Length: 175
Image (tube, one colour):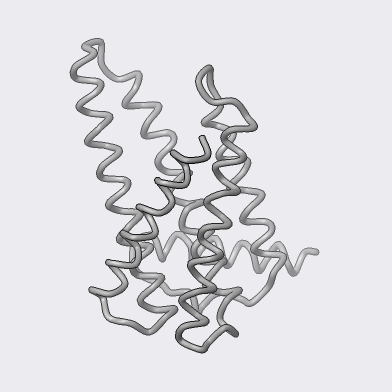
């Protein structure tokens, strides 16, 4: 168990490096337990989103929907490139970058929401913050897709944007 936790800490380091475009999925250990630990940590961080409007069940369901969508995107891309052997690393990277970005984004959103007394300022600042975080997330997803699927930057950007649209439609449809 200590070895698995050590591997997960190595994964966490590379997740952070991927979020600043300095690492790639092939550097991750191929360990399914690391993926489970990352999903669990993602769920724990997601629980910080629980409030009056969103209950624990809704937040957990959205996280599971996102994880399933990421798994399907990774599987489809790797199946298309005939390199399914890289699935664990790719899926781990996709879950991990969302874990790190959420861990950074949630406190920023809380800070922005409590930062100003003027409602117009809060809404515009919140919208700008959300837009920047979505763009950052899409850029990092694009990097993962590019390196995992060995495709061009343009194609990976299109894939990450399409993933985002599909996920948003699924969230609207289910919730």
